[in-house]
Length: 275
Ligand SMILES: [Zn+2]
Image 1: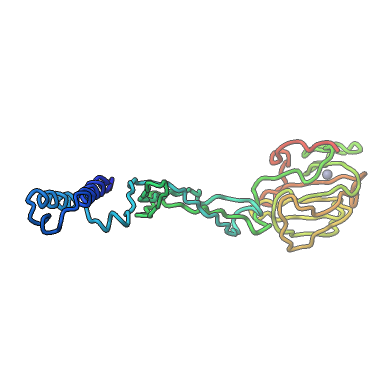
Image 2: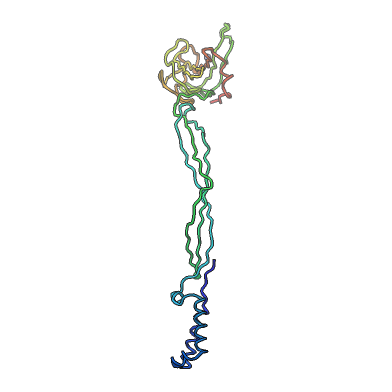
C-alpha cells in the first residue's frame, strides 16, 4: 500500500495566489471576473482531489507497508524423574524432547525518512514443543542383570575340577589374585545378605541381586559393608585378603543361580586386566 499526497496541489494554488496578487485585482473585480472565478473553482476542485489543505501543511507521514513473517523455535524442557526400577544412576529416556515452532506476523510501516514501525498482528504455534522425560535410577540395589569383574588381577584358578596335593576336588568359583588390600567391588547391584566369617571362605560377603542370582566374595582382609545394605554394581565392598582356606592373597568369587554355583566365566564379560 502506498499513500502519497500530491505535492503539485500546493504549488498550483500558490501560483494562483501569487498571480492574483501580482495583478492586484480588486475583490469585486475578481468576483465579477468569470475567468478568475473559473480558475478559482478549478483550483478548489483540484484541492479537493488532492486532499485537505491542513493535512498537507501538517505533512502527514507517508509510508509503505510490508509484512514480515518471523519463525521462532520453541525450546523444550527436560524433566528428570527418579525410578526404582532401573539401575542406579542409569538414565532412560521415556519421551524424546522435540523443539516446537511458532510464526509471528508483523506489519512493517517504512516511512520516507527511513524509520520503520513494527506491529505484531498475530502469533501462531505451528508445532508445539514436546518436553523430554528422563528417568534415572535412584535405588542402588536394582540390578543391571549383567556382571562385571569384581576386581583386577590374574586368574589363578578356574571353575571346575582341579587337583590339589594329589586330591581331585571341584572348585566352584573363580580365583583372582592380586596384592593384599586390592579393592573388591560388587559384581552387580543388590542387597548384602551375608557379611562376616564363613569357615573356609574366611571373611566373606554374599550379595543377593534379587533376580535369582547371588555372588559370593571370599578370603577378604576387610569388609566395608553390612547385611541389609543396598550396593550398586561397582561399589567397593571389601579388600582382598587371604583369610580362610587360602595360600595367598586372592579373591574367591562365586556366582550362584537360584542357589547353584555356576561358572562365573559364563557370565563375566571379559578377562580382568593384569595389575
Ligand atoms: Zn577359590
